[in-house]
Length: 388
Image 1 (cartoon, one colour):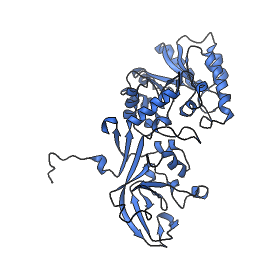
Image 2 (cartoon, helix red, strand yellow; image 1 turned 135 degrees about the vertical axis):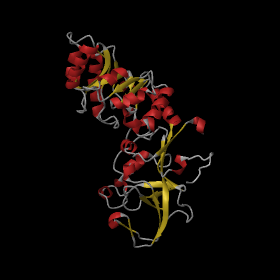
Image 3 (cartoon, one colour; image 1 turned 30 degrees about the horizontal axis):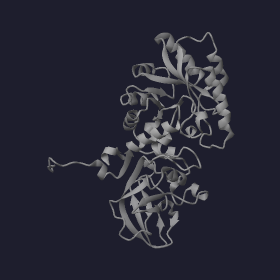
Image 4 (cartoon, one colour; image 1 turned 90 degrees about the horizontal axis):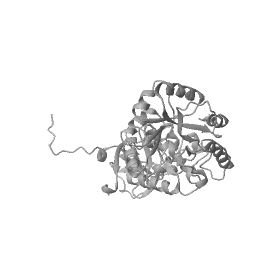
């Protein structure tokens, strides 16, 4: 057995095949930016889906220390985890409450978001046993996803027979086309939600996620719910993204190889090289959220969007070559200087040089999906100003 020196330190990040750097200072600054843009409204923080892939523990704590006091998660399990890092915050659970979850809501001071008649009936039964406890009411104003029907919600607000223990602290809805500022649907939903908000006078109202914040003060009400913007992603289509980059994903170059013109690359012989080429094979694939649809050839998307995915190395963008596989991606580095890339170097998959939304467009999707699809093999490093 080999003896390991006492001063040996296993730097897992430095040696990882896949690594993800999360800039918590940039995330906190993005939240403060959304606070300013929210005007008189408070800005909450949406940290569902493991804080959009960044890690709910570290992201939640960073946002809490920055000043966030209203958080939104998808599930009760996420809420239980977040409570450890945001001790005095209001934590809203968007999936609501179901039989068997009551104890975790009460023990962890979580606020259920009531979105359906079934949930409402169950919640009334719970209150009969447990007494007064806060909730939020999600009202559908045109999304046709989750939400109590608008007319029913308004009628319930005026119902004198409503139990006194039913005491929502927030009424909310969600914009269908918030990322498209030219859509008339935004104004239609705004007018509908104004009716709901008026019916629940004295109770906080919330309509806008990240995209809605950029629509202006009419859409802010009492509380905004920024999500993707906190993590550096685009919130509005066709507008320059003002948010600071937060994540950098990198994959190690395992091998650099020279391949002759006329040879084929990767599965399906989909790409035939037209010149002698140098290829870098890196340790990331679709199992890591680097989507197969970004392949340069051999996938349906390339019929409508000719440009495939790219990476960044040695100061240049380099294209994906052939099909992306489960654990590996091939990049064409022929146009770089001959000795610019070696085994052990890292390709940036997205980050400050490769905007996550540009990567998403090459995959035919959106930045949300790229961030929340990252697998478990990324070694994470969290940095703050103190690390600079």
